[in-house]
Image (tube, rainbow, N blue to C red; front, side):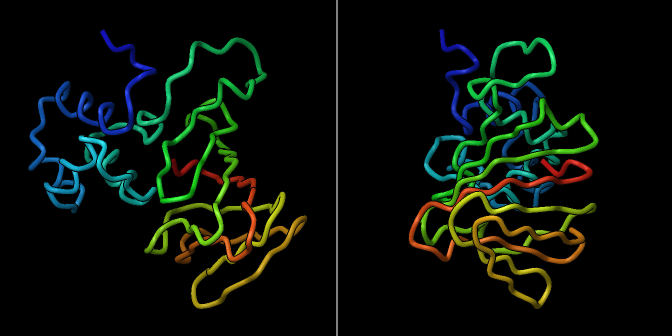
Length: 186
């Protein structure tokens, strides 16, 4: 029998959908995506963007972290690297790790890595709250509204999340960043 931590994103999504007694068609309508997309995600053929994952999580009435790798129970205030909740490659060439225990905190901290040329997705995000991004290494382009900003190692950006925003690695090395988001959006 497959253990929960061995399930991929699509398998976890399907398990949640089936447990809730929902058809793919019902989830697709609620999320505003196609039946084909959900089918491909559940079969592990495509990796959805974070925006699509958020829509699917909302349609399934679960936090987006339900799709993260499972880790054992955590004891105390320290989160070891191996205990982080990781989101399987939400966008091609992008990896996210949740540094806070879960999304039930008032603040969410995310570590992300973007391969050269990778971005947070084709579409810009809009959600309530505010974000602070810090570049650990690499070169990051952040578009907020109609303005674009290029940030280098040590630079920080802060913005209202109700403004459409998008992140991309415009450098030739892996971009490593930290993000503080309140309230949690994952």
